[in-house]
Image 1 (cartoon, rainbow over the protein chains, first blue to last red):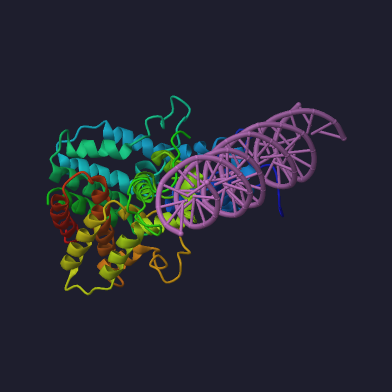
Image 2 (cartoon, chains in turn red, brown, blue, cyan):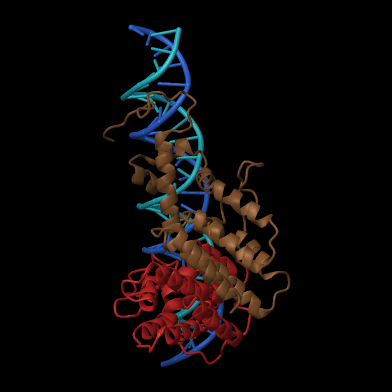
Amino acid sequence: MIGATGGTPENETMTTLDQGNATRSRILAAARDLFAERGYAAVSLTDIAAAVGLTKTAVAYHFHPKDRLAAEIIAPAADDLLTLLGTEFSGHREFLRAFTAFAVRHRAVIRLLTEDIGGADNAPPGSPGEAIREFGRELFTRLAGPDPSPGTRVRAWAALAAVQSAVAKTTDLPPEVVEETLTAAAIAVFES
Amino acid sequence: MIGATGGTPENETMTTLDQGNATRSRILAAARDLFAERGYAAVSLTDIAAAVGLTKTAVAYHFHPKDRLAAEIIAPAADDLLTLLGTEFSGHREFLRAFTAFAVRHRAVIRLLTEDIGGADNAPPGSPGEAIREFGRELFTRLAGPDPSPGTRVRAWAALAAVQSAVAKTTDLPPEVVEETLTAAAIAVFES
DNA sequence: CCTCATTTTGTACGGCCGTACAGGACGGCC
DNA sequence: GGCCGTCCTGTACGGCCGTACAAAATGAGG
């Protein structure tokens, strides 16, 4: 291309093993945005590469299997979600409060977690990512309980979808406003 | 394959121009289910063909461009949605009532309409399908109005997503129950 | 019976995907 | 200065997609 430069030009004190690579972060950020916008499967390495001004092989160099990209983007949110699922709550209000807080905190990647993905398996066994499958279903069971009535089923799906989708569509608003509004909305749905 | 048979074996009185072809309907039904489950782009002609016991070329014969499949599946729902968007309502309650009724009526294909698709353009000009783009955005504007406040934005997205998603996840429940429950839920969200 | 339209198959093509591999540019370090 | 690791490029491969085309199977109607 034009200005192909090797090494680590940005930071003079970067050691050899430095993982804080700048382009790595840029790739991650671009990929995160593209995934959130179009979904995981609809974004190719070429798309990501074009967004950061590289070739697709350069992107592949940093994230050897493509799954790594998704895994690395999702990791912190997935950890958070796992702890959420492992916590006991006194009632559905507390659960919805916690879920909304989680959703707002990770609103940039929540779509990947709950829908989408569905094809990024084989994460390095041991790291989080193995259990990332049908997270939506688990959240539903957690909220609706076992053997829910038809009405409860509908309301549970509605509450979860409301939070999840609204959070993704309002990333430009301050998190506090979204969290407060959505917590009330989710509770209102489930108790309607 | 095994029992490859030509002609129209099912109905003895089918004329040559009969469009009520049985395999055509089977393909449509299978495609509708697969699309609803995995999304439009994630389903290949081979998948659909396997679901009905044919080869992909046989499917391609009936729906020359692949877009035709999506277009034909979506058409009635799209018409309904267009009339909904063209109707005046006395308030947000009436609008949400109408939207919920619409969503329940077409719950098998609603996912394709509001999300997904995004790539099936070039429908034969004149037929519905040209304007099928960003339908979700239009619904939002209709509910939230122009220049909505942050809170209204959040609640509008939440209400729409609640209806849309809950409807898709409860296709096994009787429509009346879903519609009644969801109408109340959607109004509760927007007024919370 | 023979012909014809319809349906299905098999094969083949170009395009894009993710990946593998070899080579080149650059800076750090001895 | 020479080596080495890191970063990026170019090229190439196999795989799956949607599509095009020729040919075979089948039933309807003269």
